[in-house]
Length: 290
Image (cartoon, rainbow, N blue to C red):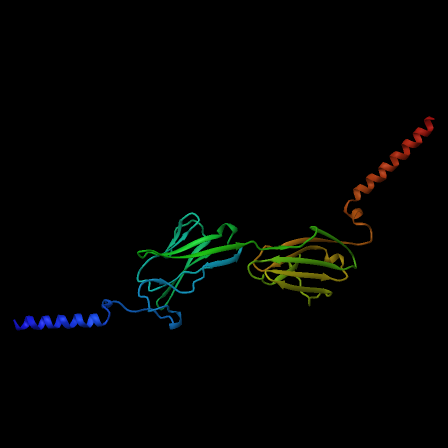
């Protein structure tokens, strides 16, 4: 009977302590559990989360120029053996589960690495196209599922040399070529001019070469100037932006001051001369018949 009274007193004491604490009891983790969160205190919202969760601050919108490589980030902390999947929201196609790719598109890859408790399961798309734009889901197979959405915007980049595809310039005059390059959403990289596949340099052996480049937002303008052109300057000129398709123009150097049409189509001048002779002959024949 003495042991029973002691047990009742002990239970009463426990209930009093719980009531003073507001009745909140948090179960302690099992012996094999280890707190793995290694973020700084400024990145935490509330107490550390012990289950799988996405790294705070992951981007939800990514923009890229068509033709370039893009990385869609997915970073998960405290993964604890869960699997990670990438799904295309457009057609609900499963693209990858962990490191295994489930699409025939060889441009898609999974880049993984681990740093402390954080796992990276980034989706990489090489040589992006306009058709790659859309929303992608990174899922963790918890209950309920954890989902991080990334919207991919793909912009068309291009290089343009305005004007005709063939340029005619007289020997000894100045040649000016302008190239516009659009590479949204960011400014394009360096622009190289080529003459018949050979790079053009302002300090090259040719002399009289000027290269000027200006940028405004996602557009860049490059101007190539050649002074005192010679027949050796004729040929194909290419504006080659970094990681974008090039633009081309053909340059013809006239050796004298004849109009371009005479150089471009000498056969038409011969036809005109023959026609004139025919008209004169007809006039003489009519005069003789009178």
